Length: 155
Length: 215
Image (cartoon, rainbow over all chains, first blue to last red; front, top):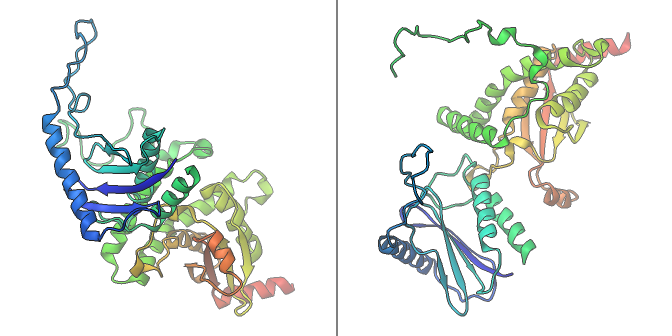
């Protein structure tokens, strides 16, 4: 399984982390990466508005107490997967609005578990780092090393 | 924040009027703590210390001060919990004290003994305790402008508290990342976070040690 790249986009739409794991990709300037991230963020926001109304949970006719409608259970989400013949982008949006974009080859199994694991590494080495300010570009050595270890082992 | 009606301000006691002092000392003997909970608390401790310090040395001193009270209390607690009743007196010689720190204290705090204990060649009053991967540093990545900082200064404070509590006054206990040297570059790659704790005892302690050694 081949992972091409990982992007992390902050709540405001700015690119806070980008990393390429595959050497054959064409080089882009850092400005291009920022533009890509910004475009994706905008597209994600638009598609969230386009998402059809989420279906209500089945039959609250049972005797159990009806809970207040939670904003999390049937939230409209923006674009999640973008697939082409050469690559596949999967977007995972956390509850706080941070987006993880994983670029992989088109037939790639187990992407969900990979993204979960990357989210776990993020929660460990970025959020528990006292020298990291939230929503700022990620410059954490241990995060880079852990990602390397995880991606290289799997591929 | 408003109090509930009828509640007096101040410390609240449970309804059976038992305080923490009434609890059995061995109650939390095998208790486990979530590593994530400690990590988040440590993040706040470091931010708090950063707010009060002006430079890296000041920051390490703040962390050291935060760990010091723990050392004093841990010394008494661990001695009172030791399995062998003959061993539950405080150590009176330097080597047993350092072994207590490297074995008992480290096992209590981190679940494993310290990796090495050495005496410095250049300075007879200085001892070095090695830890390949301090638990408190697991999630911390230092920014490029702060590479001289080692947040294990907190653990150094704990060690200083233990030494002072046992009657071995120190000039200071500090934590340093092991720097890359000729023969050690391979070792550093294996343990990038390797830390050495330098314990420097005061001259009167060394004198006393010498007298006890003779007689």
